[in-house]
Length: 119
Image (cartoon, rainbow, N blue to C red):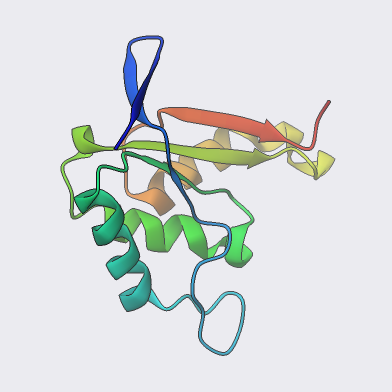
């Protein structure tokens, strides 16, 4: 794996995004066993950057990725998520949504959090 220095981090040149995970009968029905295999393969090959978002898979991506990544030491990967800024009704719920995202991902912190939908 090639790693790139970003500030004080060594990020893998390739990351794993969780926008289009394997699914069963519907978009929100993530095949967790297959996703777990994908994450294991990525980890074994040096991927250390994982990206999810509030709206991916109708809100299930953060939950599934949190469960799977929670099996690894937290200092072995970087986790990013995105705030749903595309829905302006969320703007007065930034802290509430942030806390929910931490809960859904089963983590105490994010390495990056981006507001999407705003320019």
